[in-house]
Amino acid sequence: SPKGGDVAAGAERYSRKVFVGGLPPDIDEEEITASFRRFGPLVVDWPHKAESKSYFPPKGYAFLLFQDECSVQALMDACIQEEDKLYLCVSSPTIKDKPVQIRPWRLGDADFVLDASLPLDPRKTVFVGGVPRPLKAVELAMIMDRLYGGVCYAGIDTDPELKYPKGAGRVAFSNQQSYIAAISARFVQLQHGDIEKRVEVKPYVLDDQMCDECQGARCGGKFAPFFCANVTCLQYYCEHCWATIHSRPGREFHKPLVKEGADRPRAVPFRWC
Picture 1 (cartoon, helix red, strand yellow):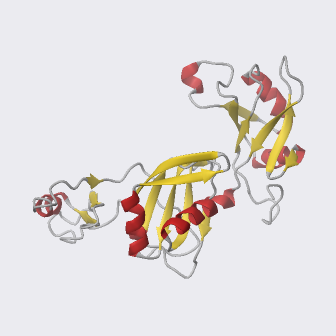
Picture 2 (cartoon, one colour):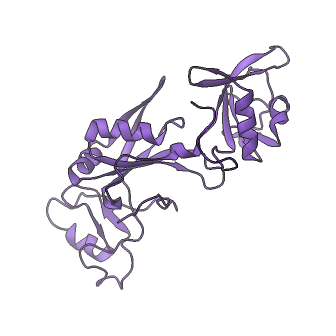
Picture 3 (cartoon, one colour):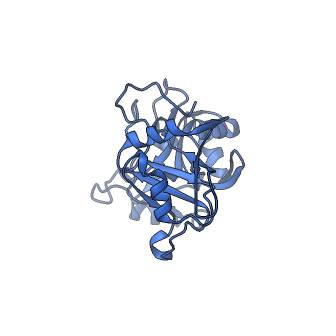
């Protein structure tokens, strides 16, 4: 159930960022703030708000950024629950008591272990981009396991401050066959309720791997900057070894993948091998 939880009292269970959808079209930032202020100090935000200089959320949804996590729990307690959705009535200058959807993010939904007996191998892990934000790690794990088998872990990437989904995830496989099947497909269809999205799947590239060809001997022991995702390679290379290996016939068209952003795999409750 979306309400309540099994974590000890006082422990953080939810992100301080909450999605609110189906807002009245004529409600402005000030009125949204006033509607939710009783739950605690907050800021109202929506995509591209600063650039647009608009006072109204353009697509009928916004994010409530609460100062304290207990405000989120108080908001949820005030909601009406219908099936697995939460609603709260909000008024605007022309519409009285319109039920709007409140969608909190439970922190525990960011990680899901399908098989805890297996060590996580970053070299059998894929990055999934464009994940619908309501999608939970368990749902991502089940979709990928149904398609490719061998899933042992799925994680939803969240921002460090508010711990809210960033729209990407990672899936670790227990075997090379499933991993290769997933990266060869390149795209996967993800469904969540009435949202269906075709999203990109690619190898999860690490920034602390030695060159698999020279083990650092030809690059002064530096970490390898390139990963080759072609199934004939699936290796990390330093610049020297990339040039050498990829001058061979049939390999000259391989494209290197490089580490994107500063995301590191989160510490999860078992060992990365």
